[in-house]
Amino acid sequence: MVDLVIELPSGVDGWREAMRRRAVSAHQVFALHPWLPMLIDSRETSAPSRMLYLDWVIGTLVTAGFSLEGAARAFSLLDSYIYGFSIQRFNMSADADASPEEMAQAILASIPAEKYPYLHRMASHAMESGYDAEADFGFGLELILDGLERILHESLSE
Image (cartoon, rainbow, N blue to C red; front, top):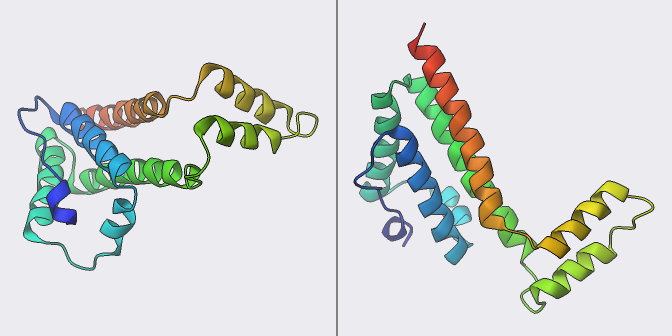
């Protein structure tokens, strides 16, 4: 099952776009199947399709100019972010019986404004404006890609 949901991006121009598409695709799959990150990490061996996927990611990064060590670190960083974001989102929505509004009210009620003024303000703001998980995911992903691009340029200019 794990190997059936993981796809390689195709028709991609450049490592950055390849990693962005891969991250967004995995993020979407994990949103549909929140148990998947834990299952992937629990496997001791990988099927040939998973090995092809891993090889493609590493090859894309190495071909772009990352060293093997740099490619491994970039891969680890991206996957840690993708998995972590997905797991956190799953854990926050574990109460399936409550509506998002009820969950938000319960969270806000558990944060006394006098004791945690900044956290309370942030939670209140999120309730008023709405929380956009996709925007948060994209923000973090772009920061990571910017940092990796900077590291790549620095290593290529040495």
